[in-house]
Amino acid sequence: MSSPDAANIHKPVMPVECLSILEARRGGLFVDATLGLGGHTELILTSSASSVVIGIDQDQQALDLASDRLSHIGDRFIPVKGNFSDIAQILATVRKGSPVGVLADLGVSSLQLDSETRGFSFRFDAPLDMRMDPDSGGPTAADLLETWSETEIADVIYRYGEEKASRRIAKWIVERRDAGEPIRGTTDLASLIRRAVRVDPKERTHPATRTFQALRIAVNNELKVLETFIDDAESVLAPGGVLAIITFHSLEDRIVKQAFRRLAGQCQCPPKIPQCKCGAMKKLEILTRRPIVPTVEEERENPRSKSAKLRAARKLNG
Image (cartoon, rainbow, N blue to C red; front, side, top):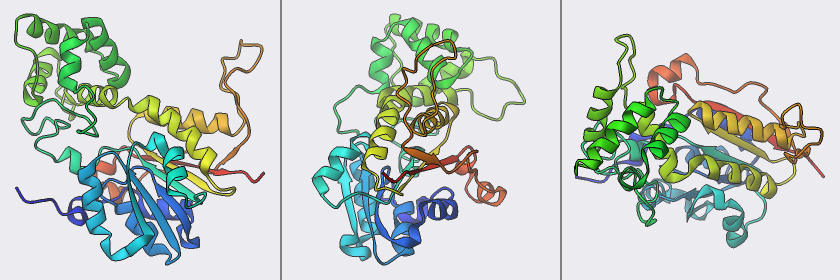
């Protein structure tokens, strides 16, 4: 199979809105913390001839494709292999100074979703991998389903996928495992879930969607690294710099909203706690009282943008 063309398979989400809120025309150093195939980075670089973008991604194939796509840019594009939660260490190593803008698009990239071998989608029969960095050596989704208890499987599917039938799905997975037939493939898992879940005929979403989301989040520890990333991104931003984050489901959006509020000095502790323990301190000014969402036209042209929400905050001076 020939290599995918980055420019043809990737449409950056809310491109106009991202460029506007990042004030990309001013130029300067930016960080695309989830580079993917480089769509947002290309837009930032072409907005100003004085812009430099450090593009971070843990997927080497994505880095290679984005580098090919942006080869005409020259040394204004700096690709770095790593997790976005390592932004502070990466910037210390690259030594280009403090960025005026940091962007993170938390969606699974088109490259990963459309891969017939990575196991992110049940559209293809593939091993249940789901690792953003397949070279990491970490456990795959199949590994977790073979080692977790029934309770652990159910809890993760419910917590990260908000799947009401999580206990039934977990029970069926463990029964298969105990019978010597562990779930190792995408279509096998999707088929089991379709049988285990009572499908509402009006529901247009495949019943396996929430479980696949939950497993992907667990395999890549996505919510924990997101919390780390937000704090570290704020710390490395230049005064007046903007942190913009695009989320695609309610758990991510909730983390971003609460983190921004905490960093804007709004205590996030429960009301009955007499003394603040969340560490709220006014470091950011929230720019989006409500999240920015795609236009109807964008949703029509790019269906994967449908659930996207963009939140942004500016680092205060001093």
